[in-house]
Amino acid sequence: MKKFLFRSIIVLIALPSLALILSNFIINRSTKNRTFNTTLEIPKNKVGLVLGTSKRLVSGAPNPYYTNRIRATIALYNAKKIEFVLVSGDNGSIYYNEPNSFKKDLIKGGIPSEKIFLDYAGFRTLDSMVRAKVIFGLDSVTIISQEFHNERAIYIAQKKELKAIGFNAKDIEGKNGFKVHFREYFARVKVFIDLLFNTQPKFFGDKILIQ
Image (cartoon, rainbow, N blue to C red):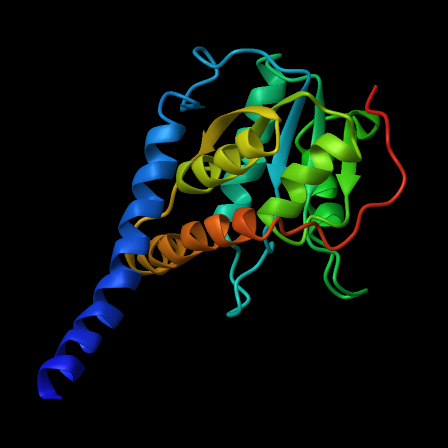
């Protein structure tokens, strides 16, 4: 009985660990050479898809992930490596609207309003990828986020028949960066669960032509 309990405990510990390791390995391997750090090396795409995040942290301080994605998007547009920007993020309430916040700051950065399209139903990375293809009619896209997020997004895009590359916004180091990277391991496991059960976006809606 004791041996059975011991083996059961080992299995319960080993399986989640194996899932974390395998998920990370598969996504890293599948997206190798699909992300870029400079505007000089990245191929041109019609649309850059910037993945939303909150403008401020819980403390009220500016969110560096947000700030760096804004900078990366502006750099990519100014380098003429994208013609349009699609902002995909959470618009869960009248008090929280990621796409509108991004749009305002992108306009301040010099990108014309008419070049920016908003996806208000990008509640998750999976939603953003599927909607980019189904709602906005994209066959290829440049995803703009931090490298670890780009890799996961590209992998999902590949599975949803959307050709994608990533432009890496500057990442965050230190305590805050560690927390986000730690959560990313579990987010990658969730990718495979969603694919297994063919999870769909929360909303679809009418098609929007980007031109």
